[in-house]
Length: 405
Figure 1 (cartoon, rainbow, N blue to C red):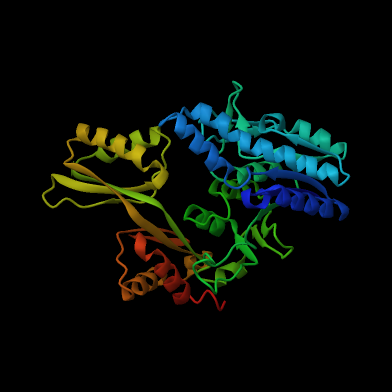
Figure 2 (cartoon, helix red, strand yellow):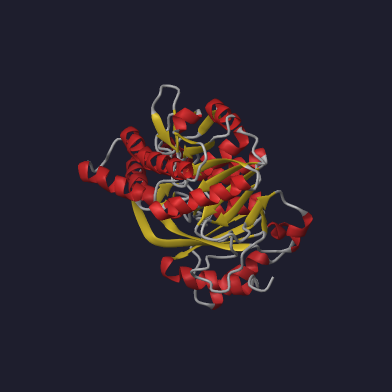
């Protein structure tokens, strides 16, 4: 089998952990498999680089940031290749560019356009272990790009697809995908299997196990993914196609996200095209808007529009919104960062009624007010005050009996 193994920051946090990764790769080879390794930067390294940049500039160039941040993964890939060589195997470290990962030119959030992987294929034929620096690529004009936070997951899944690998293993510091964050819910249970759609919802709703775009890619190209711990040899969680057994479980997991900010534009003229103008400006800045709520105007003349964005984009979004609000003749713009989103996810929700009402009732009984609601076929999300986040997660986990399934 050809396996792509991705190791996150905590898995390669120091020299001892990198040596442990090399030993796991050694064990995999001895079991008869070929291995491609994708690594993240050592834990904390990316944040250190970001901090250095902000000591130089309050608004550093995104192009230079990409070049700077890509160095973290390059360091790890080189050290990991060295550690594998010390165990008697041929190994070679490659950057995203050397791997042939070509992206668009959107710095800090680049999208992969294609992967040639010719050099990787040649190295595998010569029995090398290929260690690839994740999180990065190259544009058609030879500028280094990065794929956004958690981008090494996307690198690994995309490389697995390009190489037609048998399995993509994502190694992290948890045993797999849980019904809720085990740091908040003591009786959270590890799932043996989860559908691509459920995993995509959980990832987009705040679960930090897999990057959202990596799940989208895996689902699109049917790349089998296993999430497991690099700190033990326990079986992980298989992310795969949905089957009928999965539909029997109404709710599979609870997600929460405290990296949310709510912006409200007050006193907006209530006429066609206003929302389009506002959100086009935000989209043009490559900012992703999540929940949107527009109040019905009482007098038919003015209304309020509220929406959420990642907290990391809140100041940038606020500036854009204030500029367009003046053009629109809005009364004021308000920013709140003390909010959180809690969500229930499950493919079984398609065939079971009353799930949303059950969620709302559970939150109400514990005095948790809902500011906004968003739904899809397989999820319900509620915006709440951030101070109630952990309580809400525990309440919903108990309400839907996730510990006992």
